[in-house]
Image 1: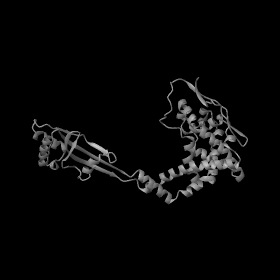
Image 2: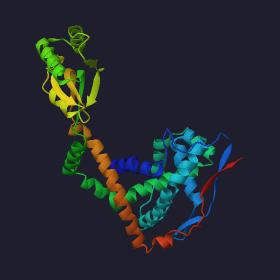
Image 3: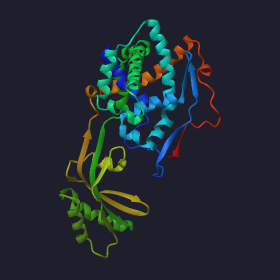
Image 4: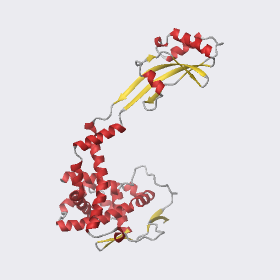
Length: 355
């Protein structure tokens, strides 16, 4: 069970706490001036006689962002973006934590210091812990946060996570794989080029078509040789235009159906027989050269099982977590109006100020 709980932590906690952090941040770039973040600290929620303020939320966000990436944390623009994106979600986590503590008391579940120390070292090592002052954090701050995470893991496991792992069985994975294959059926691409002769006059087009057939394009090693022969064969008086495309590489979903019909009956490194069509008041004679036809099969089921399981558990966890949260609210007699304190209409939780 310990392995499964740690698997869930690796999957779920970062998704909730660090969703706003990316290496290539998309947050708005402000002018390069020395700024600091002003936190409009007010009470946000009340649960089990505890008032949760915006400062409590920010402390938790600071801890998670700093321990995840100290360099990102030092970027004020990134940090305020993370605050704005994550504070409501983190507030929910702190409220849920209070309910989980209550549940743990009822079930007489306690977290040992040994488990906390082990998790601290596992997550952060010793070097990072020694630099916590950079984020105005203390060892006790991190220790309590890790203790709360372990408690949440265990209580969430009993509350809903264990049910998810039982639901993600072989048949569920097979169904998910079938759905994946429908959306990702493998890839097919065509590498080719084609030569086009354009003629305005129908009678002249028929004469040129007859000569091209007689020349037998399929006997040529490539289209450049065919083009050279056609250019020298036809006199300058004949009104025609000849063009040769560059090498084309086209995905199967994007290829013109008429092109695919011809290419699908060709051997690799071969020239097609000429095809004829009337288009936009012109008569076209077209010859194809197939360089390559690449088919890639879908990823085998065996190679997809871990990813499928990860995705399924993540989706189910988000849904089941919401249901579990509501179940605890109902159990302890809280409505959202009782939990969440009213905010001023013009409430702005964070702003940047020049130092």
